[in-house]
Image (cartoon, rainbow, N blue to C red; front, side):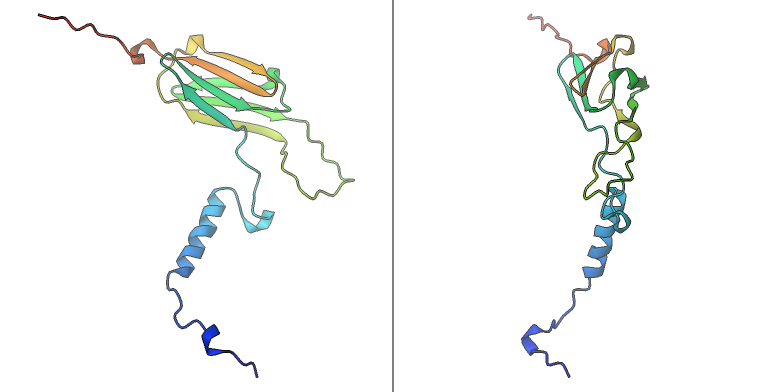
Length: 152
């Protein structure tokens, strides 16, 4: 017979604990995690990117290490920018057993909604050192205009 001290017993069970556990599991599921893959289904979102802007341009910088610039496709449709490509550098080597595998291979596609209208015919993309920089000039209709105030 087990002896349990009175102070070690939970007197009241939190009725919301099961709901909190379910919420955490659903969050992990929709963020790409799950118990089948050790908490992750396929790594993080690839390629990682930053979107910034100034008064006349929007800048998108995406990390694409191991992907030749000639094999990256950049497309704009409406207000959506899409970056596509394929990372081929990971060779499936059956001789090795991995302790950690975070570099995924295969096709990728990342789409983002642009914060404002752009001049599609003047978009430029440059790649250097595994980072692609996409410069999107803002449309003239959305650029800030200086209006002179007349006195009198």
